[in-house]
Length: 613
Image (cartoon, rainbow, N blue to C red):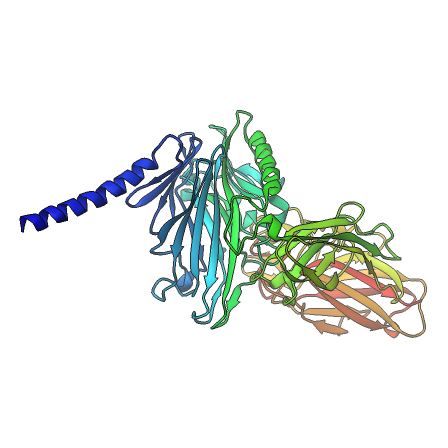
């Protein structure tokens, strides 16, 4: 009995010795990793992150002694489907003098989450870098049931009142209300929006949707403390894992913290659908939780954060990620280059410079609704030259679109292989101009309504209370006299009278025809930047009976109420017999609804009329 107890004690002692010995080894001068009973600590002398083993939450994130984190975590969907990684198993992927990569794996179980996917979360610290890299891998095993993932994100909450200024872009660079201001704020009919009644922002609305924007335009966003001159940022080095292309906007930063949406589901975003028996995986990230300090204040902090974006883009794909099939090394990827040009007889200045060029998996019907695959987008230079680097081997369709032109160019059968540097030569997009003279245009085809009146104020809550009293009903636009920047509103909604009363808002376009063919059709082209529950009645020289009624091809996203300036892009073309037109004065009227609610609306990207002569 004594011998048995001695052996048991000795075994327990050896286990304890091994655990403490391992931890002690990781507390050496050169180590950036400490393994505790419940937590993992990553520290490089600049930042220190404490991560809970079971949940993969960052429960503390300190920069030069300042606490930056109230919580940091991955999460999926909302309501009854809301879930987070659970019961994670921790492994150490990399532990060197200069870099540590810790893995938190939550294998799927029905009791853990509705979404039948494994979640593998990585936190990475690098010596000398003022930040923590984060990336995650979702995996659907072949024996898993049919499932779906919608809203999929990383949330980084900052301590209360630690950061008092937000920086998104030139429009959203402002002080934030304090927690006391929020406590005294008035609730509104939009659940996410409150009216601030005290402090620096008194009289304004505060809403998380106020800060939505295209991630591709930013590269970085976050908050600063204007007293301590410190900043907390999310920095993006790569974008290929983001859904729905470069025009997709979504939440990013707001009062209380920063987040990154991998499955950007707002404004008619797409989700991931997976079939039973389907084996699938995708890596999301890495992105960087970056911290900085500068006595120059917010402008200097933002300038430094923007430089960090350039530094991280230059490192992509990161060389320190190895042996992960979802993230091939640079040598295992390929590239596609060429020259893109546009030939438009009516618009000789639109030549293909500064156009978007993208490689999309060939199985995808519409890249605006693709969350399942990787997308690769770049801008052409001023001469139309482009190179899309670091593309995973695969079969792709090349897509291109440009400001100034409706719709897009596509070329199928682009094969990318390992190490391939493919030059596909000259790509020429010839615009069809056989429909007649371009009689008039309203707006610029750029997939947004920002160029119209109030288009720079779209991010303000209840903006219809401002633009309706300032805009006549009906709105009358006269070609040749009116200016779309001032005389065409960014959103055609119901016309607001008061919070319980709305009415229809007709928009009339007056134009002159000085020459007209005796037969054939005029072509009315409408490009929609967004639409919500709206049918469009189109009147041609008749104010009583619509010539045509249509629904925008893509609708949804609640863009007006969620303070956006576009959702998903679509176009509609209407043939109008020349017999409906006449020499001299003509008009086309547009009515989107019968004034039933504030929700229904259309945001036009562009409208034009071509007439045979």
